[in-house]
Each structure stands twice: as C-alpha cells, then as structure tokens.
Image 1 (cartoon, protein in one colour):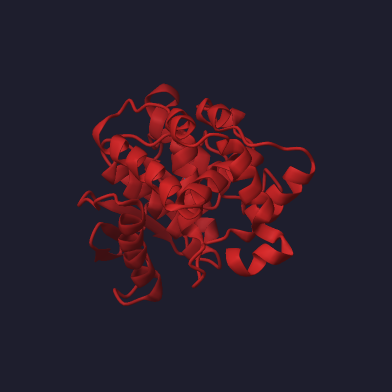
Image 2 (tube, rainbow, N blue to C red):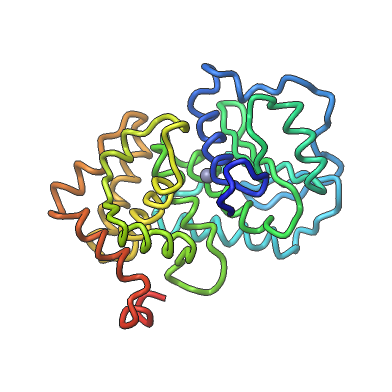
Length: 283
Ligand SMILES: [Zn+2]
C-alpha cells in the first residue's frame, strides 16, 4: 500500500468502496456496470472449489496462485471456525493494469481508481484484479471478503476489512504480523492514539473511514485471535452469531461484558509489537 490517497496502487479505499458497494449498491448504483464496451476476461477459467478465476491468459490449476487461494480458504475456515460454503466467488483477473483500469472506468465510473476490488451482490460475489507484482496479496485479501460473504449472513464493515487484512499476509509467520500496520500503530500510540471499538463499529460510511481506523480494525482482529484462548473465543462466538443473523449485536458489548479494560489491553498488545523483549515472542 502507499500513503498517496489518489494512487492507483492503493487498495484499501478500493476495498472499502467494494464493501460499500456491497452494502449500498442499490442506493448509489455503484455495483451496476454501466457499459458493456470493455469485456471481462473470459477466454480461460480455472476452478478450485468455490473459486472461479477467469482470465484472458492461461492459468494452470496447479499455479502457485491458485494453490495458495485453495489453502487460504481452508485456513480461513479453520481459523475462524466458519464452515466454507459452495457459493462461487468469481475472480476477474485482467492481464495487466491498463486493461483492468479501462474496464473499471467504463463499468464503474463512480468508483475511484484502485488496484483490486470486491463487489458482492445477491447475484454474484466478484473480485476484480489484474496480474502484477501484488496480485497474490490482492487476491488473498479480496477472496477472503468473498469467503466471508459466502459464509455469513452479514459482516460489519470494520470486521470485514480487519479479517481480510489479517489473511492477506503471506509467508510462514504463524502470527501473521502486518508489519506496516504494526509500525504505524506503534507510532500512533506514541502520538497519543487510543483504540475505540465502539467508534469503529459506528462507521458505516467509507467517507468516514480513515487509514488509522482501517489499521485499528486489523489490530482488533489480530488481538482477538492471538492474545489468549478467551479472546479468540469471543471472536469465534461472534462469527457464529453472524452466520445466523443479519442484524447482529455489538462485538464491543460482548467484549465489555467478558473482558474489562479491553481497549487498554489492545493498546498494550499494539505497543508490544516492536518492543525488544517482545520481538521474539510476537514475530
Ligand atoms: Zn477489503
């Protein structure tokens, strides 16, 4: 990611727009393509369980990218204890950035230019991305959105992003530290920032979502999954609730009743990412 909010390389606002489209598509019309002039990639397709990747270049079923996404699906299901469903997530994988951006500008003129995109609707769970140096991370992030929306009745905006950020991290680190987020949060703490989950839960408009909110979403997810068996169970229980209802309660309420001073604990957790003595334990 980059710090330049108008950069094509920045995905997070795009992600948010994607999620916003998911929730308010009928209000702002951003999930309805306005022009068929640019074709979606369709010459080749690869299927792997829920995943269907369509492209204009040949991609093997054994391609590391496809294998990685298969493993990701398994990992998301196991980690979150969310049963994976059959509902298809279609990835429209363009050959290059220019073809992708041309299509997106024609089909979704109201959306800002971004590097990858998830748009969910009752008709389709779709990911738009292009082949490039960041494709693996982009697809891990967006496919995670697809898996969540296939398996849950609803996903609060902040949690959707926090979980997708958590699973986009590649590599063998079992702690899945997003180094950039951890560094920025550590700096924010030094500058007086304090976490506030209720405030995050109240954000339902992308225009109100700032980079630090986005990083805080990742931090809450990471904290709940890794701090202790109890914190992990709070998140897993909440995800079970999301399987059954489209109008879930507040996770902050659950946390408050089961874990006093949660914000202080998160603050300590975030501050500890780069403490010399904690380094060995947290990485
Ligand atoms: Zn996202």
